[in-house]
Amino acid sequence: MLGNGLRKRCTKTLDKFGALFAWTRVPPNVFSSLALVLAAGGALLFHLNHRLPAFVLIGLACLWDTIDGGVARAQKRVTKFGYYLEGIIDKWVEVIIYLGLAVSGYALEAFLVISASLLLSFAKPRAAMVVPLGEHDWPAIGERFERLLLLNVGLLVSLFRPVVHLGSHTMPTLVLFLRALFVMVLVGGVQRILYAKKIIERGGLDKMKVATRTVFNHEEK
Image (tube, rainbow, N blue to C red; front, side):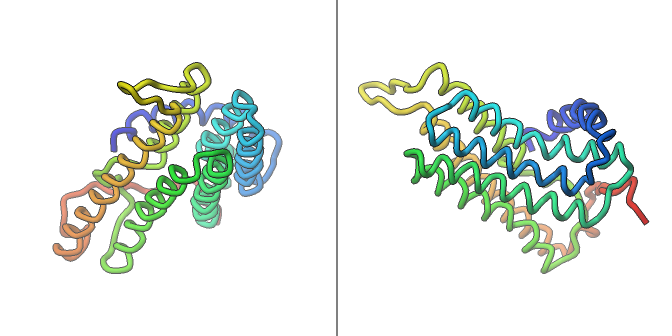
């Protein structure tokens, strides 16, 4: 919710970067899969305590979702399966990143965040199994863009300030950010459940005055 405007502006900018890669003619689905390699590399470097290159690779893996979309649009090869596969890869990217954090001393925080994120993400498809849903932004915090933005800010800040002092207590900076991220996602999950309840009780999205959008503008025949 909070990141929708910023996300749309970033998408327009990153579409230009995607167009730069379009000349390679690498199939968009293959290009999307490269995010898994970036995430795995970032997770490994984080575990090896090479935090700066880890931050760079993790940041690229998080941005790849938008860059690969730009590649598909520039090549005019946007497909329904590509849109589906992109969402699956996005989830795996998050899992790989948090796995890297989990084996590097942040097991509890990583488990809480990824668990809450997966539960939040399930709110939409579960509601779609009950009533018809269109493609639209749900009024809830904790969208993927917001989650990854806060995570990367935490990684960046922790490079320069590894620990924070809260009164007489000292806490790793990344732990603080991960706990804040967990709270945000948990609140967002509750918001989605309440919004789904509203849609279900009204019999579907078509009974509500909500603007939907078309996902595919250049779909292959």
